[in-house]
Amino acid sequence: MKQALLDRYGVEPTNQMQLYCAKQRVHQTTKGVHSLSYDILPPWACVVIETNEGSVVKFALEPRVGMDSQFKRTFVCLDAMKKGFVRGCRPWFGIDGCHLKGPLGGTLLSVVVLDRNKGIFPIAFTVVEIENKDSLKFFLTLLREVLQLVPEWKDDFVTIMSDQQKGRLS
Image (tube, rainbow, N blue to C red; front, side):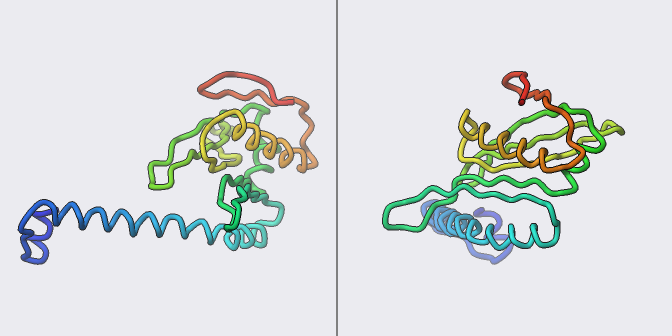
């Protein structure tokens, strides 16, 4: 950071504490921007549903006493994703998550399947506060409800593979 300031602006900080304080201010500002981005999710969901008829976007909010509700989870499944899975793939999918490293944290869970060309085909994704039994139940319950909306869906069972365990969703 010191070298970048010198190269770009010809300014050299007098001590390391100035750099540390500047870095802390940037992190605080960035965290604020991240938290405000959750406010635009509901309008984004409306646009997705209007432009992709049949898509499903759900939110779970956590009520707080005397304050606005706080974002807890979201679920997204585009119409083309669910129809593509039901019409062209086997009733098998993989589920996995990755930790979000931003200032607000959380986990991104996704469900994917291999298509006929052995390419990865996404079905749905969710952002949850943490990967646990409750958040997986939220995700898989909504996924089952969404898939059952497709008229061609005939399978009673789907085989699920994850990095944790294998099982069947009835």
